[in-house]
Length: 507
Image 1 (cartoon, rainbow, N blue to C red):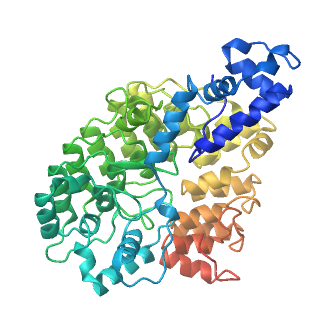
Image 2 (image 1 turned 180 degrees about the vertical axis):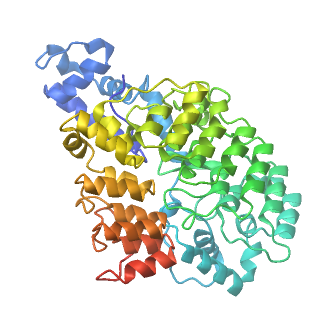
């Protein structure tokens, strides 16, 4: 069994250097190198330090063991995989912007860098700067097939593709993307006469563009044109908004053959309350088939389509997205399936997650559909009762099981943060009464969570309970005010600004 995963952006020269080092260490009897050979090379099974065979270890022996430790049957297969990863990897978020450029190819590159989502450096101000550049240099709209795609310049794209259809798949621009990717990730949203990204998408697909065009972000995550059409992500809709023709563009790509089993698109919309993307993907076959397109291209194992919908069901059950659960139940073969078994869900089924997070309506839906009944420990019973804000149940459980409250506090010190993330003020009042810390150090606080949600009533309730608006989270080094400003919750930010000691830098 493989014991490790390849690093992001794997480097073949570094792997070769590692093999050389491990060969030397193995010949010297170093324990780690000997263990690698013993576990992953069939000729050295059970080999111990000091064995005479170690003196004759070849570089090819170490390379084979190293490849097998990463899950590949041979060094050539590992090498081919790394070469594929490197060929398809793009890191648009690492592209520099802001340099002084006035014309030529660099102006084109600056424009495209600013105009498109990068998933790492996104900010609405970048898009505004791209629009200013286009207004100052209207010739950018027709400079290349990539700018035509990003702008939606119909007549110029039609003329170019009529003359040379191969332009539909030419990689170029600062990200070395195909035109369809610049179109799908562009957020210029131009509505000027003659501009339509949707029409240019039709022209590109008719000319032979790949509806499954995509790239590897940081060598790991597959971002496709479909991913770009749906947008969003961990930063939310305000940072990475959907395409201006979100549903129409996605439908156009799917009609052209794009794979609906798009794991990154699904992940990016996990936190959205809007189910239109999921309805569309399910209509086009999400959850069906055996292997998605991109993992097949990469030669990688990947969750099956059914595992993808199982995972969507589990996240929806945890978040209490009742409409999404209702949508997914008929499409999931095994309601108790664990999907990709993400570590944050701790091996729980959808029904278990719904119950543990106090999502009564969602839990009832799953139970009626035939999900396996849930058996809870006293601590889990108390956790569920707290999150659904059930005071009577909390009191009864605590009376039946002395010491269970302390066990819950010790085992789930972040439960108040979970309650805030679910938007449950009554649960937070209950937890505060049980002694849970609303101002934990070393993590983001419940007030950060509430500020991110933009829930003014929840924020006010937390302040009344004693939440400190001046605490700084360790990851983004920002107060709840900074989180509210980053999420563009203007009224909430104004309220927090009246309570804080400083400006509240954004995350």
